[in-house]
Image (cartoon, rainbow, N blue to C red; front, side):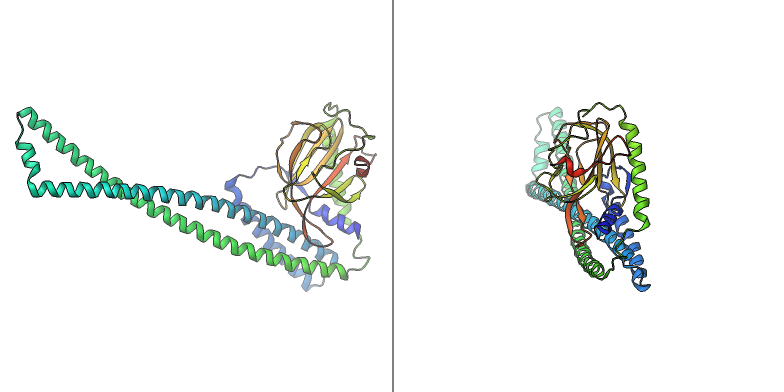
Length: 369
């Protein structure tokens, strides 16, 4: 059973090169996740209808749950962004409404003044009471200036009213978008619960043979070893953190306040709380940052001399490639991961340690004793 769980975790940590995700790309991320989930639903339907192996069904469900969890996180982020947009729009509507009220008062006063002048012939009296031709020209110019000012005030009032209307339409659209996003979020959470229950039921029915590791695990380990081999080339001769050795002991866990739930040779599954910091176990140099192609979560690789420590499944990183880091320095934040035995979503990272010699396998459990 442990091998099965480790296999599923490996499936969920396939890597792609790091690509920064801007705020503008959030909608595209959501669209891609929804499309991927739709494709996986077809796979699931086929597996269930053909009564394929329970192993394949569980693996597909694990991938789907992870994708839904990533989509839920993206939707949450989208709702927060829309909330900030709504707050900003409400502020603009308030400010513009104050401007409209002020302009309306100013224009009303101008209308009253113009009406009084019209009834009392004040304008003509003002012009023809000029003391000279020069004074006459000055008073005509003054009246023209006042007329231009009134037109500008009226134009400004009309423009501001239109701006208020446009902002209110934007505000209404944003609120509707939030409402729709929340509905979609609730549907995704409901579907994820259904798939988790199905996965649990399927695991309970699996035989020993079905729980054995399939050939895909060996293939994945081959790719993993190839990736580490490339990193070993980058770390050859590295001096940062060079005091690290195979005998290094008594290090702090990379998850602040975390605990190890499972060791497997050079790896450790470590759980923590939401928002927990991920810290470098030792001083060294960041040699690679990559992103999970399924859920867009980060993996960080740090060289300690020619040793390499890896931290998989981070929701955010605060370092970049070639950065020098100190022992216990924060490198990122913990992310969620599906627990294959319970299908629950928990905050977890996969930590691993790699020696310079590919034939020597270090034990992660020895580091934290």
